[in-house]
Amino acid sequence: MKRTPDTQREEEFLASYDPRAYDPVAVTVDVVALTIRDGALHVLLVRRGAPPFAGMWALPGGFVRGVREAEDLPQAAARELAEETGLSTEEGALARVHLEQLATYGAPGRDPRMRVISVAYLAFAPELPDPRAGSDAADAAWVPVDSLGLTEAGTQRPGTTRKLAFDHAQILADGLERARSKLEYTPLATAFCAPEFTIPELRAVYEAVWGEELHAGNFHRKVLSVPGFVESTGETTERGGRRGGPRARLYRAGDARLLHPALLRPSREEQVR
Amino acid sequence: MKRTPDTQREEEFLASYDPRAYDPVAVTVDVVALTIRDGALHVLLVRRGAPPFAGMWALPGGFVRGVREAEDLPQAAARELAEETGLSTEEGALARVHLEQLATYGAPGRDPRMRVISVAYLAFAPELPDPRAGSDAADAAWVPVDSLGLTEAGTQRPGTTRKLAFDHAQILADGLERARSKLEYTPLATAFCAPEFTIPELRAVYEAVWGEELHAGNFHRKVLSVPGFVESTGETTERGGRRGGPRARLYRAGDARLLHPALLRPSREEQVR
DNA sequence: ACAATAGTGTCTGTGAGACAATATCCT
DNA sequence: AGGATATTGTCTCACAGACACTATTGT
Image 1: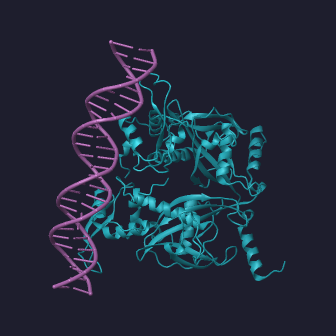
Image 2 (image 1 turned 60 degrees about the horizontal axis):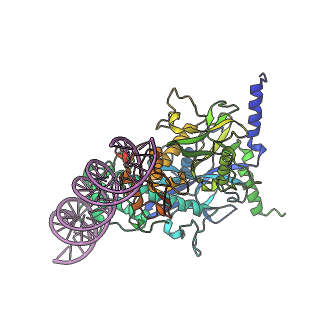
Image 3 (image 1 turned 60 degrees about the vertical axis):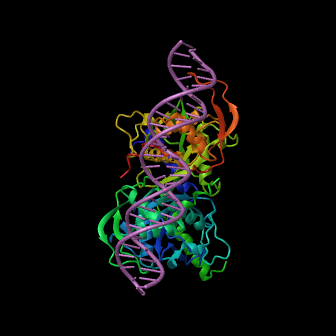
């Protein structure tokens, strides 16, 4: 190739962009995968088998595969999720999982080994099977979020048994706040439900994520009044609730991508100042 | 050092984490810096002096400095912004700029040279001086956002003179949507204003960002009714508007971090379905 | 004088939340 | 039968938006 001034310039540029010339930087993807089990919000965690933080719990995650595999960031997140849940990307079970980017964490020292930039993703999943531990994990489980003693500041209260590695308490706290907020103005609560669901089931999702009870009657009317949130199937459940009550009507997720007007959390009285 | 099974295991782990063993990955920071000039929303752009995309416009950005400098991601964003605007981080002028993480872009091929993961930041700035081109830029300017022919999909309409490099049209589109949304439920519009401002000036910010006219009377009453949005200084402007009208009262930003109730955009009729 | 603008008042429709009522189903 | 629950009805208050009005300033 002829070394015109232009190609020479580009080569210099390329050289200046070579990361090998700098300190090594690694890029990982971590996933905050949320689901509802037994009426409580759970997060998917793996127990680390190797140092650092061996024995502690962490969000599922790992390397972004490089240029050769040409793996996009959402792909990497879906792969990590599939590896831990045992669900194949093909089966369509993962297709029902909502996945969105949460934020990126790159503070120096967040990983004691080297500079690691971690792109966190947030997943909303309907009830999934118990996970099986992946290759480099000692264990994996759906863990009730309440059991982790998370504070608003993104730390864990002292005395919590399951300690989170790295800055994963912060990432999880950010993910939870995003989830709570998204339920307000998007129909993503339906992502926690089976394809057909009842309004009380949907209400249970809101109560689990927001951590407070909602008024059944007002919630019902509100959901039906938001255009495109849910659409009726015309069917009802086969039986009433396990403690009595009439059969509930079944609904599907509607075509709205934003709720208008929004379903605001009741506890907004305490204005963040 | 004795090679216990544990340290050996860690060494293996470390080896598996060495990015040099993988394809090289670079991490950059790009900044969507927004300001209001002459009543129109402007974004800070630099014209590229070197290939690829030489001659095209791009968001200011560059490498995250590695382990040795221990540069955090927000620091890197502030540094890039300072380099292009000529404002020193010390002066406090940059301290009045609101900076928040926007999203991370890492699609393979988004940079033709190598795998580049870019963490984008969003900046809200009061009126700043004209930029001076940084080291590797041919030019730098505050550019009216409207002149870029951005579509909702994050592309540029054909026939637009200033073409954006890489996927920066997408990043900018995402930043604009975030900005529009943030004005609804946070008091960040005040970040575009001088320390003391009038309600009509604040309204001009909303009109520039949302791209639509607001009803002056209703806006006024609404802003004053949201607790903590603005607080009165007791002063008024020295003169009325340049086309007549009484002097306006001056306000400072209040202590609220969320607007409750929110100031919703009028054009939400077209529900995104 | 005239036009433009800051700021206030008034009215109306919508919607959220408290509360009540009714019908249906489980044990 | 008795208790729980799904669903609908009613009432009230807050608020967004339309419109009107007054006061103050620049040209």
